[in-house]
Length: 255
Image 1: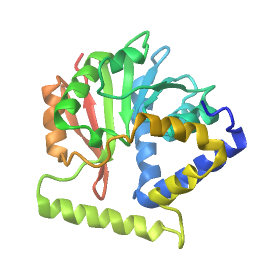
Image 2: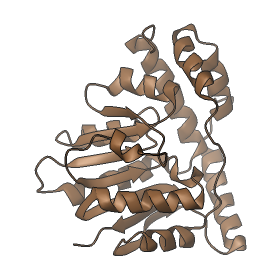
Image 3: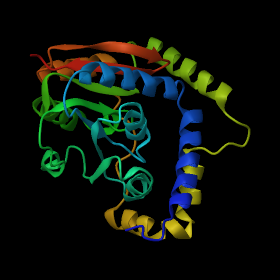
């Protein structure tokens, strides 16, 4: 799939993807750096460190982690054939991409892991999973991690109090607005443009065949995520970074 996609074309679409995401999410690059710090801390001194990137998209985070820590074995999982196609064309020799629906039946088997994970990270998709499915995913990740391993959820995690959540969201929106370039591309316009690109036609045909992926937000607060992670068996859970309503939430598997 995606045989018509050249490396140059993939890079062009990936750069445009990065730009529109950076303008839409306040503190995105700093958040990625914080995730890298956590992965570096948990893998320091470990042989053959293994990391799973959940909802990897084009491999934005996975590629950054690999550049920073070349010894990492990174499995990047997603279910969107367009984003996976771009990621594989760009980073497929350094990152192992897996086409799977996180939370679907047997999704963890499709990862084909040969050892426990040092870390599981996500920045784009856990907020989309229904609460029941999210609890199952958190529990499964607990079993996939080694003792002392980290689950890092770096996404939109609103505060419990509605008034505070609204204020945090507004702060984040204003921060993003200050970075936005006049006439810059947004999420919808990127997808509209990509859907018309001949080099992506096969990937979009596959996307249409599968049907649209679930969109939206499960609406779960930061406190509810903490509660679910504790129910899943994690020994310690808490935030290490926040910008607006974007947080880096860390859960540690007990020894």
